Image 1 (cartoon, rainbow, N blue to C red):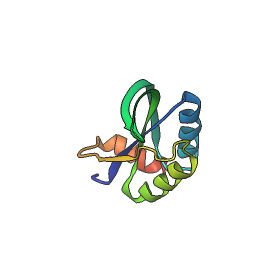
Image 2: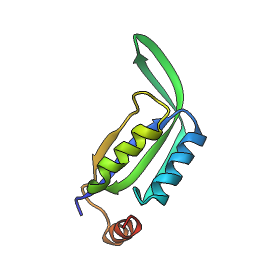
Image 3: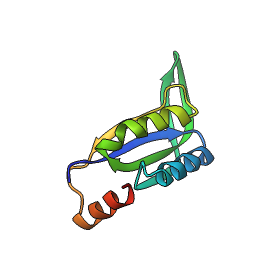
Length: 105
């Protein structure tokens, strides 16, 4: 069960996050996508300190789907340099794991 990963990205609007999550789940790139926010992000961008409100997507998928998820995010994301973090899952409850695998087959 160590093939489960959570991909994290952020968008500037709930509408954009919602649109992305619907396609990710319908295209079976992810079993589940959670949207959190708004969150406040603070960062330097092109030499300027920025503060923005964003929405975080937590994309639950399997390692073998990562390339396709990354390509989807790069193609559909409004940012020129979107956040794309992958966190491995050390343990997944067996029934949830079975559901996750079946959801994206």
